[in-house]
Length: 148
Image (cartoon, rainbow, N blue to C red; front, side, top):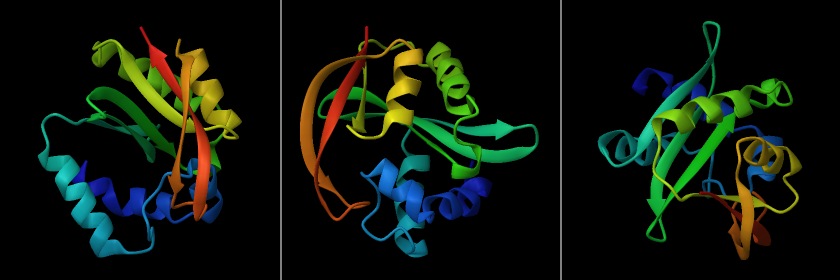
């Protein structure tokens, strides 16, 4: 996975994708901070991580990690591949590996695409929250999803 970091970094630098994801890095163009962040992810055996491939091309990643004492899932797909079912298929496959339940996810309320991915994978809205979203430079509302 370490070899894919430059590709993930490129995906993260898409301003439209950052806006949609909302809860992103403070400065997504800072390679050294990005590398520091991912070095911690790669070194942490409690974070389950996978690269998402389309044929021979890296198109994203999916992670599961503990946040707020709950196991969460998160994913990022290169914007060029949005709307093709790749995130849904990748998350469905990932959920066969990550069998811990309940499993949680958080998504900006207006991120319809990500909400649909979660719903197609069996997640349901179980709460709401708000927080500062670096990708938007403002406090926004989000849905909390869970998979039982």
